[in-house]
Length: 321
Image (cartoon, rainbow, N blue to C red; front, side, top):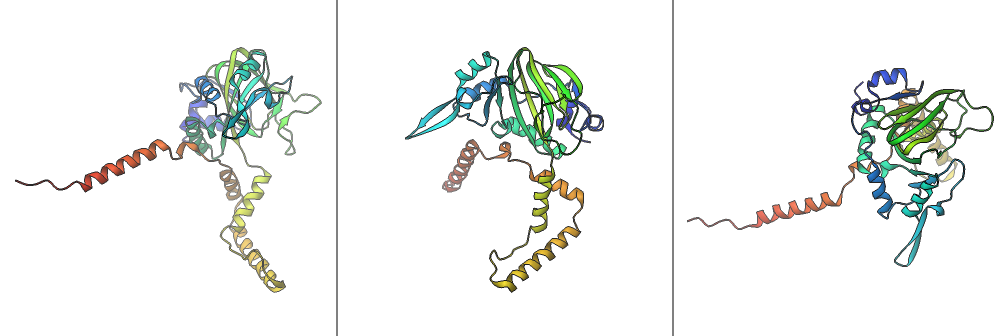
């Protein structure tokens, strides 16, 4: 298995997939240098830059729910007032009080993170999102919960104590806080230190508490298709390429469209294998990647190069002596 991005996080990719993936949690000590392309300096710049806004920024506290007005502010632009902008002063004050800062979907607005996730997504064949957590020592941002994703966590600064519990017993489980009743059995307890990586299989319940210093980690949530995604993928696969009138007039025309629809679907279904459906469901879940979107700087350079080439073409030929 050629997966250089995954190897930087977990070592031997084949051993990781065979021994850990979907089976059990694990802690890794990679040798690949800085694993998170998003640093505390990047977080500071995002918070102070003035454009970061909910839902990309959120403050959480396992003991005390917080509303967005506790850490955001409104801005007046021209004649209109807009709400939900990150207020750095309020955020720092809440961190001092024990709240956790969560920056959502960093890959959607930080180009280096987007580039890393694009590479890892291609290696694993699944869409991935990045979340950044900042938690003061001795505090907890989220209660015991399950994620609908396999999760890779890299500790960026400080340390964090983790407790990972067993996965769900059947396919009827749901992501979110673990309900009342006995806790699932604990399968791993560890303190993650700077540059260490923790893997949590999809659905395994977990919780974390800041351990030393300001605990900062980047979580990569590796999404998997479910029944809903398979159903949507099946609809797309069965009916792609079929053009039908939207509003047939009369019974005969309606029956004709119904027949053509069924014939097309039967033909597609006969050639469709289960793995085709799974692959399509996974690929369609991939999000846009800002790492490859055009930039104004590139546009400006293209204009300059075009104008320079045009001016050279328009120069009169030199006189010969």
